[in-house]
Amino acid sequence: MTKTKRMIFSASLLIYILTFQPFFETSIVVQAIMSLIIIQVLWIGGVFPLAFSSLLLMLLLSVHFFTFTETLSYFGSEIVWLLFATFILAGAFIESGLASRLSLKLLSLSKGSSRLLVFFSFVLMFVLSLFIPSNVGKAGLVSSMLDSIVKHLQSVGKATNLAKSLFIGLTLIVPISGAVVATGASSTLYAYGLLGELTSGLDYVQWLLFMGPPIVVFIFVVYGLFLVIFPLESIDAQLLETVIEEKLQGLGKMSIHEWKVLGIISLTVFLWMTESVHGFSVALVALFGAVLTILPGTGIWKWEVAGKKVNWDLILFFAATLMLSNMLIKTGTVKWFASLLTDTLAEDSYLLVVLLVLGVTALLRLFFVNVLGFLTIILPVAIAIGEAFPSHDPLFLAMGVFLVGIPGFILITQSPIHLISYDYGYFSKKDLFRVGSIAMVLWFGLVVLTMYGYWMVVY
Image 1: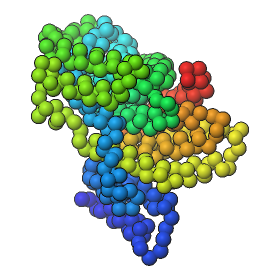
Image 2 (image 1 turned 180 degrees about the vertical axis):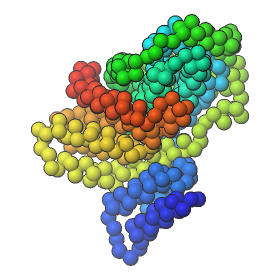
Image 3 (image 1 turned 60 degrees about the vertical axis):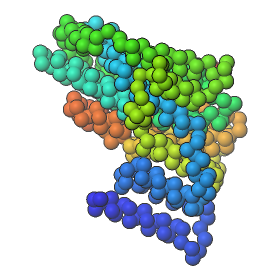
Image 4 (image 1 turned 90 degrees about the vertical axis):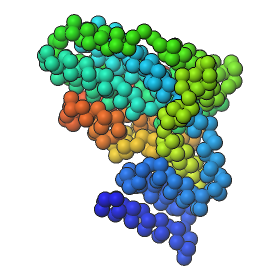
């Protein structure tokens, strides 16, 4: 452990001792706030791996807030099992080779055009969100493919702006595209589960209707922004087309495993979209699809292999965020946070409240690397603030906060996706700030328009 990490851990330990010492009583809200500070410092500071810090949180919550049985019950949450199942489905999608084939097939639609290559790279990230619940997984798959294409193009000419558009685009679009469907990312799964409690039942199709259109609009807006800021060079269209075609040919004909995975995922998505007809939850359908990838006859692999595709550390961390979120709600801490704002503003100031909450969300997001950990704090607070204004639906404010809170526009430290993309060396921090600051303002404005326009029509 480095000196900095030891200092952070020592400070966290001191906060814990002072908060929970037995000599004088501290209020439950103060205890909850201090616990939140402790775990966020450990998570953000990277003192321990996320999973181990989550175990520490489990101990803290079991001793001071819940019974151990209550703490363990969060591992039985539907949303945790949905994450588990989607890891196996996504693993099968990638392992079979179908992910690479679909990606190259979409990129081949560019027909050698650099402009269309950028556009279809954005579309690709959108499509992959249907199948892969990990933004890091999507970024890793797409970035390696784009890197190979760019290197071929740079060997015969200049493709600087094309590379910037592709890799900064990946940085901006992957997190946002992960919100399109309820299973698109771990942070989206958390929001889907939490926001579902505000409604009579937020299903897969309703989520898609809420989130899909504004994100599609943003993709077109960002595409136009890139064309203006980074005018694309003339490239060898024939070479680009040949490179992609050779990669496709290298995959050969579709294998039986690819056909099986295509059938399983198609069936799973169909059942997700018809939940209102058959009544089976999204999590149950996902688990059914995951089992099909392993069963003899329909499966493509054995459990021994499939189990290794499950990110058990993330599942532990995900369950811990549910525990933390519910602790903040049950202790009244969330309502206390919300009251700091709502008690000072009148009912007719709701628009000002919305703008303030969204603005604070965007500002705080600059300092959080882990989106899921950030949403654990900000989403329950947004819901509580929304509920303080009875004449307005709290769902709209919560969904708006979610959309503003997921992307990182300006700093490469805002998510692992930024670091993955930046490590390829195709753009600078200044490049990201240049386009990201404009994109951030555009996204903020689009979210506000969506809240007060589109969502009011479809809800």
